[in-house]
Length: 242
Image 1: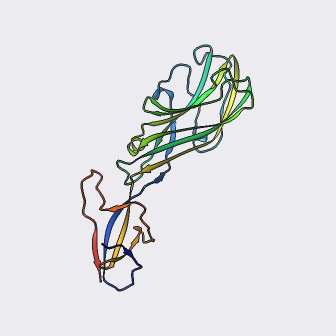
Image 2: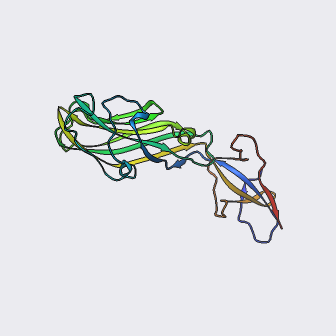
Image 3: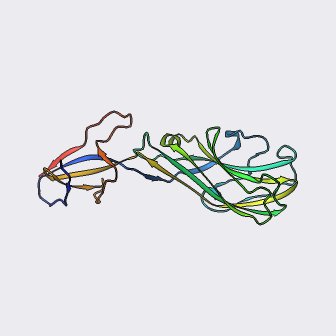
């Protein structure tokens, strides 16, 4: 078995193969764009937070203004809600599975305090909630809390755009109250993605591994031939130099 990596010397005859390293963990940076509560259908007491939510998704601050009464909800309570659609297209990750984690900080500005349930961070797959972290009940004015949700996902979930994050905060219930949401973050880790690299043999059992642009590369998972997107087997790229 050939298992001796060595640097290649210029001018020596060599054979290069295109291979894939099925890594154990691949970090993915999903994007989030505004959507609406209509996508989720959680009920009439969760109306959309008016305006763009882009500041929140980019890690900045987003204000939830106080509602003067419950007319925007069911007449007695209102939970303004910012919804974002999550997408990512990590290459060579067909069939990969992993975990999605979303976090944000919330601050109750007042003037009123919380009244029983004060809000929550939700994670949805289509119209099914898959994770939830609730704000402390009946929170006092000035309350600061970081909410975090995490759930198993697939690469197909990310590519298909069927994952949603929603942050609902109580803007009226007994009293009016405003909130600030900030420090939003979203990360994904996938297992089973394939990283393409080049393996150049300079002798029968000596080789060097490099990225496609020529930088040194060290495999971290199982090495084998790459598969086409339709899962059909493809031949490894092979060429010789003298």
